[in-house]
Length: 583
Ligand SMILES: Cc1cc2nc3c(=O)[nH]c(=O)nc-3n(C[C@H](O)[C@H](O)[C@H](O)COP(=O)(O)OP(=O)(O)OC[C@H]3O[C@@H](n4cnc5c(N)ncnc54)[C@H](O)[C@@H]3O)c2cc1C
Ligand SMILES: Cc1cc2nc3c(=O)[nH]c(=O)nc-3n(C[C@H](O)[C@H](O)[C@H](O)COP(=O)(O)O)c2cc1C
Image (tube, rainbow, N blue to C red; front, top):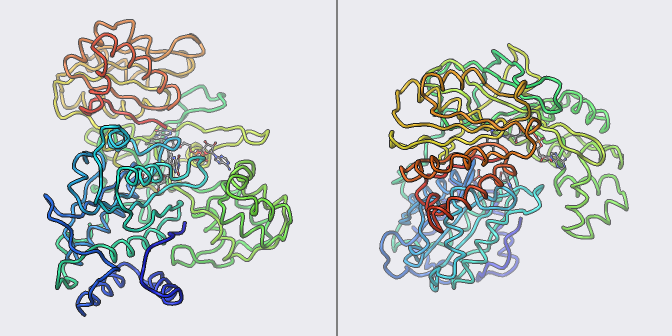
């Protein structure tokens, strides 16, 4: 998480002092300082490049690739800082950026996350594909900078940002400042990087800091992960066979506010608590008192609350490993650190936080322990109702997540939390927009909805909305789960929608009953209808398990390209008629 090799005219000591100062400043202070320096008419000389050659549109393009909005918020922050500094810039989602436009920009600042297994954010896939293509234009003369967001517990850490950075260079672009990679606690390194980018962009002559930015820093939404909506559980009932290893529940959470923006296709971010017994075990193993005060995000809280609500108690990051190796003085842990990133990752994949606490006993200080642990991340769950139809509750469909870990079977933190909630229990959440998973604006476009397991949730919201709005387009639902008898989630809702004509077809695949059938089979069994709907501008939706639906999509793609022409599937994607919500 360091930036290396930025060319500068300072001595090492001056550079260290500048760094120390910048790290201390928040964006507003940094901006004031940059405006002050500009106001002093200090010649930017080598530190900031000369005004660029004229381009069509502002010389600076700030682009972001995002799924959960972290990159967008940072890009918006940079845009506001540029406006305040008098630097003309454009802000765009990579979803809308065409590669051929890049060569016209003098400066390109990209902030991108990595998703899936080391893939670019879904909305940015076309951009990455175009950029990787042999036909991508040369970018000689374009100065670029990449901020890569990621999560170091994934095998392919920040791969999208790394790939992008390397490709921009290979196309002839020149680095404005070095790539910065950020882990889940990205706020501080990202803020410092934005400050450095801002200082490297050219200011128009005589520009001083403006008091009122042309683009105000966007107003914070009413609810987000820092300021979640606090609500309560109304209903929590099992939808599937209750004795399954991974049961599926339907939850209803009270919604007593009018300003909760969520359309069918959107999700909510759930701020789960760690299980009480895990918190107790961490306190016990570390010998700390639950009530000891610690500071999290600038707020004092008892240690037990910090561990329950704010810190990841399963995935130890490399910061935790470093801290614990120092604290325990264990030679084996030290060796893991010395052996480099690959060994560290392998070690971290085999140990949860509690494993380390047990295997390498030590006595931490509360504040240092909290600082070393990773922030607990929110988890997303799709809304299973349409707020147009039922506005007083948020419905979710949650499956207990189980995974094998070093010979034992572990349970996911947030899904366990949700499944264990009782009516009346409090829940913290915020709305999450799934921009690529919305109903099409054309009311006549046929809809093909393909779901594996909990992937059915947003289709329940779609169907409620379609029934209420009287949309004329035909709709085809294809759903897969384990067993017909027990696992046909929301069976009555969908059968009723079929009987009323809201759904023209409902097909199901039950893996335990028909092990050889796949979600593509019912669609391919009626290939004529599928191709006819596609010719009528149908939209296809895939939601749920990414492995199974990846196979389904591959089979459909092959059949569609064979029948409607090579490249047809790609065209569907380009025309934004393919919608994926895979996890
Ligand atoms: C847009 C979107 C919508 C979604 N909608 C739904 C929905 O409607 N319903 C639903 O049920 N789910 C949904 N999900 C999935 C959901 O967000 C969670 O990912 C899922 O419930 C698992 O979360 P968890 O906290 O229970 O598991 P976690 O505790 O996060 O564990 C999940 C993963 O982390 C790994 N892992 C955890 N700890 C360790 C460790 N110490 N070492 C190594 N690996 C570890 C596990 O192997 C596993 O792969 C959605 C996801 C997305 C992105
Ligand atoms: C489903 C999912 C998959 C992810 N996969 C990766 C990954 O493979 N590599 C990585 O470095 N980070 C991964 N991340 C972490 C994100 O890059 C990180 O949370 C980032 O801050 C998200 O930024 P965004 O909000 O702009 O999308 C993943 C996150 C999610 C939710």
